[in-house]
Image (cartoon, rainbow, N blue to C red):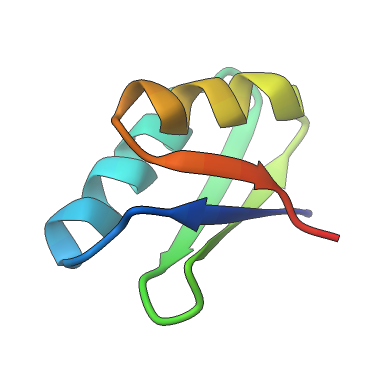
Length: 66
């Protein structure tokens, strides 16, 4: 499971936009996005850079969380 920090989300619409973007990345089996924790948990064998790119294309900032 990969954990991404996601900055810029302000509402549930943002959460759904990020979740939809992540689910479109090849290899993603499940994506759970949390507004409160400002993060996304992604299950599957997706390329981390592709995940970050997908989030950034929606207008948010993302980075792998330690």
